[in-house]
Image (cartoon, rainbow, N blue to C red; front, side):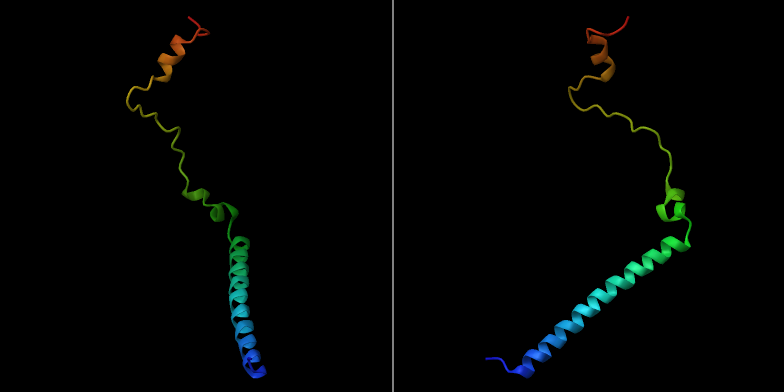
Length: 79
């Protein structure tokens, strides 16, 4: 059977490490919140890093029918 002193020492160690892990998470949470408050929202979101590239081009592979041909064969296609 474990002695009372050993159990208390283990509980103190577990309590210390849980407190250290939770404390680190709280500090990171506070730090990220301060960052979002202190800087412009557009900079936080990364809007200044975005570029408008337009739609991506279609790449045909193998025997795929192009959309223009498929629409031309459709019964509802206008002349």
